[in-house]
Image 1 (cartoon, rainbow, N blue to C red):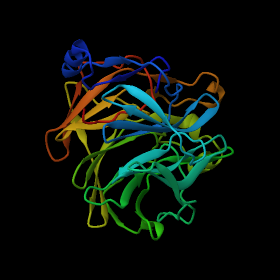
Image 2 (cartoon, rainbow, N blue to C red; image 1 turned 60 degrees about the vertical axis):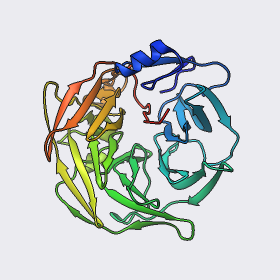
Image 3 (cartoon, one colour; image 1 turned 120 degrees about the horizontal axis):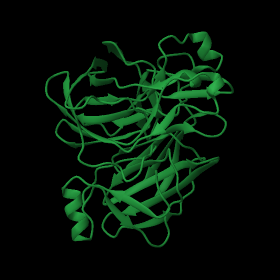
Length: 349
């Protein structure tokens, strides 16, 4: 999440001491002057041309729709004066070429399914791509928050969407569906029909999906449901009360229009911990950095005033050792404060 008093990064900064801390794998605090975003969570961020572009998010009951750019060289924020999507949180923002594409999210009334494009080069301008699109996995229009959306390498027009949750009144659902969303200037959007192989993850939201290069992605953690929950209980609104964090991770591959799943195993020295609402980014070949997030265990409706959920400050480094095996190590740094619903990007300084 963004704090009002500071932003923090794992990137070298102006100060020599901050550079040494960053190289040592420690978080370096960046004190900020002037204008800056208000505190929030559930926002999105993409790195583009020396800047970090932040959109939306939530602070308590307030939802945001503002766009901010953080210059990694000057460490200064700038509010971008541009009108666009309605306020939202838990949406996704994916960099496609010179544009940031925002999909879905949630507001105070439920899940959203619209798609917007923000041009980042030359004139910064929002364009509504569509009000929604049809799912290839059901007869309902696609709507979700807490999903993931990543670009497909080699394609500037396809976004891989996975998971997410939706709610309408007391009815709460999550999904383990994959949508291959093709975005074009001429036709708007089109969800591509695809085949599937392997056992997918359970229905999950607020997970991470990290591109590994080529056609491979690492899907890790997130919030899912107690194994005993029935579809009737989900439809009756008990899904949110029987939610817990998962430690399961999968490799997702998109091979010639086929979605392939393979569950991964982790070796020590540290097991991959259950968590959701964390941030993850690829920092080297087959190496993923995971930071923060929240831990929730299943709780009952009578526990509504004391849910078992707690943000964490721990960080982990995941490294591939074999085709379906990964090594998990506790990182030598911890988050400056426990938080979930934040973002992490790798950019060039």
